[in-house]
Image (cartoon, rainbow, N blue to C red):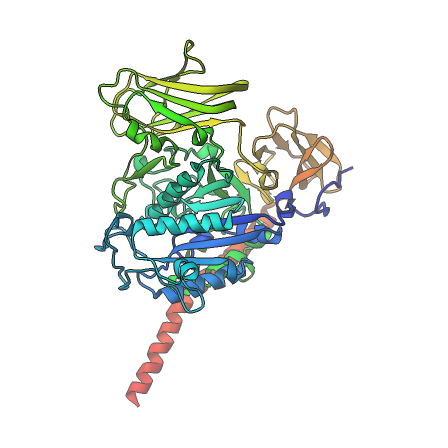
Length: 584
């Protein structure tokens, strides 16, 4: 019979242990540029963290005041976060200007000395009466619109909160998102490089547009799909070969995925948590993009902060003035913050043209254990990439191979941890390249147990309650874990709790259906009987499948009516009332 070692023991209900993990006394920090990006980036994870006992803090970099008064956007954000369970005292507004690509207004990211003037007429930070800007809140004075002031505010609030986990927007196509991402990374580099720094939060970054706000419109399908790989056919902010997905750390197969709760998957929009939160952003009509934002998972890329390079003394065979860029947490910089396409330039150490050695040297004051070595280079032109060699002493050099293109990492994992006091890297061949990052790590991964994920995949989809055609005879089943685990098995039961199949040693990893069994329970368990995930599969006949699709179509029509038709009707009613008054 089925094991019941699970935090939710209803065998006929889908569930995941992540939704029951104790997160009391844990701190989560979310940093986003605009009011509504809190949903695009973190979605219902905010609600999950709060339900699990964590304190969630949200920082808005701008006031979102390009078209709409900032005071309106501020209160919409507070109301939206209240729906997600975040108290108003945990919401902060830095009060910087909202801008847009090629808006004709000088962007804050390019303001080094003279304050910029925003489209709304401000040249300093501001908030509302009940939510003052952060600088005024802590010092009693507003900050000029200069980039260094933004970085200072970010640094102060990060160190003030000292969250266990930080989520931040990444290099989207919007100039304010790019600014937020780059300034955050610059600040994290300063924090991590401090002498005897002990603050090393878990950091995740995500795109607000291509994986949320402008993602594939697919919510009202029979089975809610996973976040889709951005592509030019379905994603509004996709830039083909220039897109950030596929460059640097943004390998789609290495994305970190988190499950979402049933209250977010609810097709009846009035009961859907994310729809209700989006509806608070009335000035943006943010709920229009509800169908794109909600998927069966939330997707991020991790930036490790446990890099031993930050505590090393660094030397180089040339260009020593740029050595600090090896440990500034930035992988690249903006060539043109206002360009529509991602216009990036290399940020890192570039050897001089006449440097024939091209060597980086890292020295530590005391021995360090090394398990993982990662190196990434970036080239703005075509041509051969350099070959990487490393040495742990002055006599022996080991070749690791050619470095990948597009700023991706070449990763080497030692069989056992190696104790070292120095590490040297040499780059042979190749031209016009910049070393954008060097990662030296003691462990395979940086994670904390209460943030780990175990989830059953049907195809590549985070599955919960899954519907299939009765004619289908099997379905591939896999397991997603973060961090990677090998001790979890997939067990398939019928609805009475009888074991039908154990896929732990099944290389095909397929759930094969029995003719007279239409409901299956698929569980992820360890060998001690602890259950991490439970998925329900139901096979539908022609009538059952048609009924489900009719219901979904009905819900979709309700959504369409509320978002598109009803506003037009209200506008016509107001117009008729006005005309009647005019005639009288």
